Image (cartoon, rainbow, N blue to C red; front, side, top):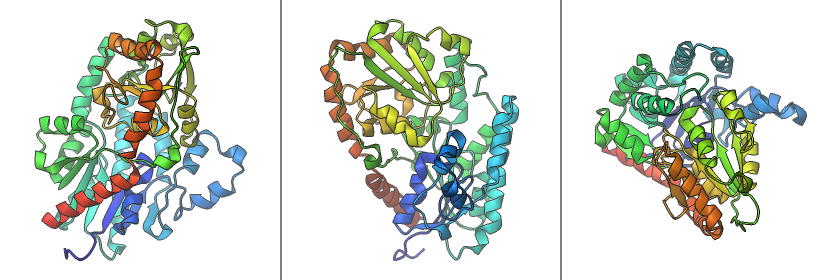
Length: 417
């Protein structure tokens, strides 16, 4: 590849991961050859005019989330396989977890072959950018055709994840309606083959890098690149807490025991509940009877459209995310950008620094989490100090800075090759 030409990269992305920051960043840099995705309502998709014409009263729940799947990418550079969303609907209706994950894996395979049928129409591209457990067929083709392969390892390896979450479920038995993370060999095998075929692997945190190395991935393939986000969108403001009102805590996330909600609720039991209000936003896979025992401590909001998440960040004092296992949790970046101090765990892959923008506590440690929350009750002025620090920290992870790092690393690796 001539060094006087910008590399051209295909992005294959299922879902609206990180608000399409990868294809948007590459497009701004003049490096996006084409963007392939599934359900998408932006320019280039036949869903775009439908969502624009819908009355606002219709834009609720799933329809609102679909309408938000759009990005500033020229229509000519986007191909959306919208019919795949019907397969997603069927997968999420499946109650047998093994079958559900097999269906999701099959969606990834179908997605890749749909791309390969169209890839020959592109005049030029140098690399394929894909995501963990969803890129294998593309990478097979790429290696046969001398194309550079970039893998975004958005979470820790499946096997490592299973072990962590098995321990979490043992610590909090009966909390999860249906265990979501089981040792499915077909998922681990896809991951391992993708690692082998990848020329470059991005991961969001040192936690993920160390996990990959423990699984035998060569260190020279792996680059830690924390996420970026649109700082202006989150419109952060400095928070304060007088100590005379309730301390408002927020959790945002979807899943089961893995996100640490049982840890958070057990921690709140150790604190004066009349001084704390917790809001939980997200689609939780937790035992309703267990949750009901904490009804005096928590407001379960449920799943809301991405466009409304900002309202919840703005209405609270402190963000709490005690996850057992993540890649680099996007919600912690959002909370910082909104101006919230953050209490989280090392396993969240957060860029929060202990004692500066919030507190880092061991995953599963109820006592440590309760102590961290209590520090804000005992020293209310810490909310304002850490809020200002949070806003400053978020600026280090703006989309512009993220884009600069991403482009620099990709170009360096491609030119080396």
